[in-house]
Image (tube, rainbow, N blue to C red; front, top):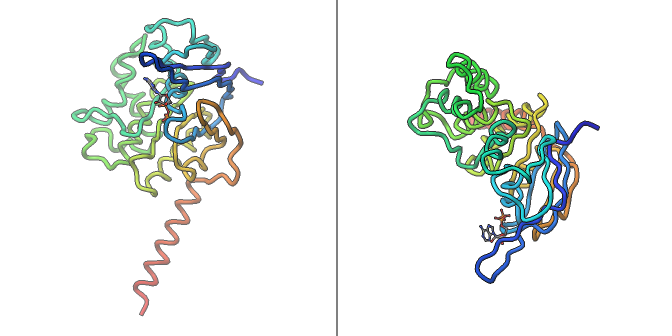
Length: 257
Ligand code: ADP
């Protein structure tokens, strides 16, 4: 088997507030292989964010080991973790987090400005345009976020997450601010990226959104209590086609005498 993208071994995270200890993660071991598409689910307070912050090298566990694409993250200082994040990870957030007065193209170029080897100006532009093309927005590159729909803004954010060619894409409630149809469209973008070989992990509290992934982890009280392949996986393109045919049937009925 190839090297896992993520290898967690007995990860624990304890927060201390004065005398109070909160065991947010209580011993999680987990492998994620290249090409997986994992949903993390669980009630509020179950430890999902703590787990995602660990995966994203944003926070250090209290104990346990984390190898990201073969690199031992536990031994790295803050700066080295930031470099590793920039090289190997892409992030997508619930609120898109785009710069408001900046075009789609410039938003997507942003992570390259912070890359250890910043590409030349022309190369940055062509890579950003290529990433926008992957999410179907090549023709919107000069639009500001306010000139784009919520779904389009999230696609710009996905292009930004892709532009440094990450080993792992982490998405935190990426459909949380979107209506149900737009959510399916965004899950379709993730599914096609996954088909192209990108490994994805996303937090969601919606089971129907998780059904577009390939594997579901359920976290409870800081532990993974379920870890299974998605049964009856949904395919976004099929769901969208069903929606369209239901809509055209409804239109025909409404104009019928
Ligand atoms: P979820 O994302 O599933 O809502 P979290 O990982 O945010 O769960 O939280 C898990 C537990 O850790 C909760 O009890 C939460 O209150 C606690 N917790 C999270 N972050 C902190 C922190 N910085 N300080 C203290 N307790 C925290």
